[in-house]
Amino acid sequence: MMKLAKPEGITALVLKRIGLGLVTLWVISLLIFVGVEALPGDLAEAVLGQSATPETVAAFREELKLDLPPHKRYFAWLGAFIQGDFGNSLANQRPVVDLIGWRFANSLFLAGVTALIAVPVAVLLGILAALYRNTLFDRLISMATLSTISFPEFFVAYILIALLSVQMVIFPSISNINDQMNFWQKLYAIILPCLTLAMVVTAHMMRQTRAAIINILSSPFIEMANLKGLHRLRIVVLHAFPNALSPVINVIALNLAYLVVGVVIVEVVFVYPGLGQLLVDSVSKRDIPVVQASGLIFAATYVLLNLSADVLSIISNPRLRNPR
Amino acid sequence: MSTAIKTLLSAPISARLGMGMVFITLLAALLAPVIAPYGETEIAADVWMPVSSDHWIGTDNLGRDLFSRLMYGARNTIAIAFLITALSFVIGVVLGFLAATVGGWTDQFLSRCVDILMAFPTLIFALMVLSVVGTSIPALVVVIALLDSTRVYRLSRAVAMDIEVMEFVEAARLRGEGLWWLMRHEILPNAMPPLVAEFGLRFCFVFLFIAALSFLGLGIQPPTADWGSMVRENSGAITFGIYTPLWPAGAIAFLTVGVNLIVDWFLHIASGLED
Image 1 (cartoon, rainbow over the protein chains, first blue to last red):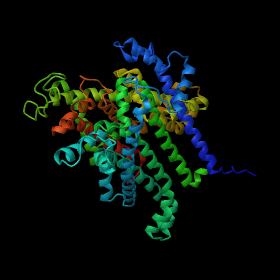
Image 2 (spheres, chains in turn purple, blue):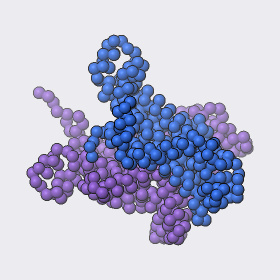
Image 3 (cartoon, rainbow over the protein chains, first blue to last red):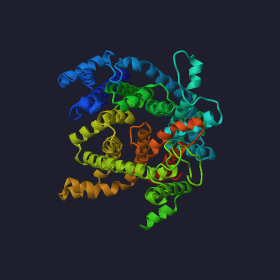
């Protein structure tokens, strides 16, 4: 008799996924480290350039612990990193934690508000487009989303600035926020970057939601329900929706992961004091400790969101719990 | 050949529109030195001049003719994006076919490497690498091509997996043909249609990516005309109600919309769907 594979518990599966995520993060940290390591010649001179003074070279060497052998240096760096000590910035000698902390909070604020707007709109439009497939409504939405996807984020951003900030002076074109502002003032300041991101993310999310729903609506059990003469609403709510949940959750999580990266460009356009802006500035200054820290934070957020996409779809789709 | 022309003629209006848009852009790129009234870096007038008969769409932040810069920019940006896409396809397709035909540990090793690279956001990865190696055009080309080849690898491996089990590959293998011959003469011709559609998609992606990097000041460096960096250089104008940065940004959108319209149609044919 053939022995069936024993279904694994959800906890075991989830733990396995989390373990995999941690391994990915570890490999990424290794890559980041080796990347700096592999630079030919003297790192200090290459990065600081011809104009390097002996003091900056010394600070640079101490900062990256260039006096230790590579493997020791890696563990020292990783150990300090896990304890929250990201070292000091090469550009202004301030601790990286001070630079990153509030900027990361700002980036999360921007991404969070965007997600709150974009997710319901995208899912609703996606479901409607799938239900009314090939109607004028669907075609219009398809054209609109296809063009939005093709636009670079900064094009959308400048169009919005031109319309809403220059033509009609409603919103500020520079999103400066600080601690003295209350929640509503902050919200007002980030309306334009938020709209820009929301438009781009909604377009992606909507197209994928539509595809996922259409995929389910064409499966045999929906056809069966149709042939039985069930009411359309009943089919959608009771038959299609539970099955669509897993792909739609996946789409949402993946797009939130995209959002994390999308903030970089939008922050630069609107001079928003976020982590993306800091990363770009540090890359052009070649401020490696800051680049390493903010890059790892971005990567960790991205991996975390992808991880939660997997975990949520395992929970919402029992079929994934029995590996073939 | 005649079937190709027939398919081209049966293209829906959206795809024709896309072809027209791509054609105009390519024409501008090829004929830039002929059409452009001024040189690429020639300072012709005052800063941010309005639209006039001398300067069709005004001048930029240093008083260079924007229309000429746009033409030369098409040249530089498209050429580099094309080079990167081609390189990424060479890497991705060769490794993908290799993984599918050899299988075993080679496949495992390559696929796990690609998994890890893809678990990392591309833009962040590129920024980190560029902070170490510096922003030169060769570095840019190699870094983006490598990052982008992961997607090509996934697709070409999947396609080659399906072809690899067919009888004619088996026959060639029993005939004693080598690995390279199998990949070049048996698998590649049969994998062409999905790869061509993917090439269009990847080109769009790379093009937008280069534009984004240049916009961040980390891509193609001035004074070379390039659409992304032109947006960056002129971005200050918008708050004064001067719409200069919208021209290069619009040009980027124009080309990518065009390519996407064609790719959309291509994917539609390839999927064999009626609706």
